[in-house]
Length: 338
Image (tube, rainbow, N blue to C red):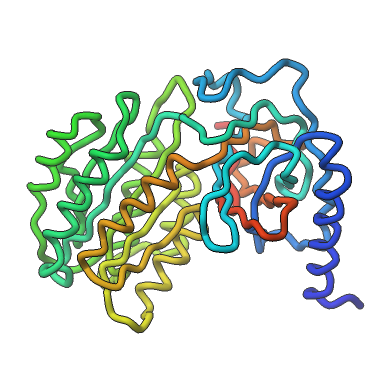
């Protein structure tokens, strides 16, 4: 009997050989996260993606949503020093969607310019009272640097309840006013707030063009009031196809449970967690998020054997250079016919 670790090693070797050989013949996409829901030994090799017959639209163009069976996969590539890697081509990547190669690739874009839909969630619980002013100013600077005319953002504070002080807009003055309205106090219902925000703000978002949905969560990661579990909050983020970036406000040199929570949420959604050493460095975390949002790749494809059953479909994205890593979501929920 082959042990699970040995089977995973064989699977990884097969993907690597595929990327070096077959991928050079036909284009493919990339990622590092392998969903735990699917046993690697049961997955076929990450064979090359089939390019769509029609020529792709120019980079940076907007795209109408022709069918809900298309998947927009946003991902980031990093080198061994954590720096963003740009300039890669489709043939540098291999992809498995629910253990199968995609039916066809519709588009591959470097440094995608898809419009942003960003939510800034600030922890306003009493535990961060002495750090709150830094959060507000850093959030304003982030929005000022990040938002382009086609982008939209909203501002929200949360303790035991959520408080959206400014809904989606591209007006920095209104977003800044919304941030200034927030006041710290109360307990912390992090999971409830993240669940509700993704459900009400992101899942219901109606757009005629493809957009990138992201939440910047500023918190120490502690939760003492939620009714929903962390796993439920993560699933709602995945249903809403929202990437979560987290900036910790806990500057304690030793990691605690809150840090682990932020890491788990961001890993599952394809984002990243930042842990500043000083509270003044919260702004560095915001700048890192802004840089990543402008250094991403977009892969649009049609999944193979797609069923509209509401089930979770895992994603495995592989880059052919072993010195690089790919950060993307672990999967997504298929739509369900009513």
